[in-house]
Length: 218
Image 1 (cartoon, one colour):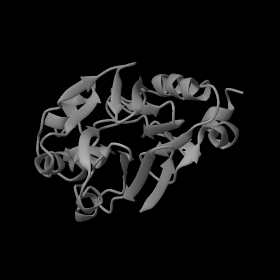
Image 2 (cartoon, one colour):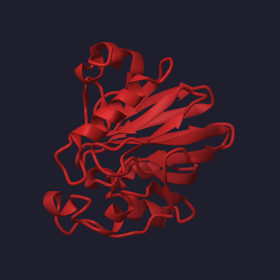
Image 3 (cartoon, one colour):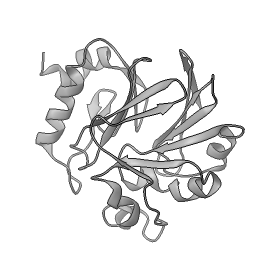
Image 4 (cartoon, helix red, strand yellow):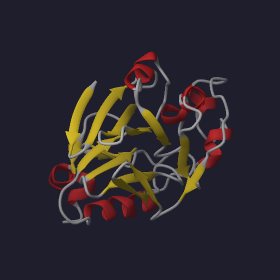
């Protein structure tokens, strides 16, 4: 588990053994309000990390199986937590073909509806931190990033990784949309800590200089 504190936010990153996606647990330490960002498996490790926390949101960066298959179990453990996903990927929570589950682990997905279907510019509050939804399609129709502006942190899901970007060859993927989404992130002012859906964290400044999908915008 990787732990980091940014202002009043505590960020814990778990790399889940099942399908290997990152699960980020973000807590406002002043209020104990917590968000889980992507949950491909509601493992014992995830539940232990949430002990004593007030889980407010289950934020999903997109609807693919490796990011959502633990959502049902997590919601059962924390029924007051709101499942949040972009409106264009909400169907993935109730359709195992659209979530790609049928092609990865057939029969494994338990369907559950989203509590909140968000769109570009929508805002959520986690304690004293404001979260802004950035619609960044390309990997999927409803891929989204969660921006913590005050803390200069972005959770990018499978849009932007360290030194690369997400695949565009799944249903709803688009090279053109991915290009626009990456350009948008590139053009954001200043630097941000980047927490992607797979592999290590990075910074926007590093990716602008080293990521070949971003360097072309210089």
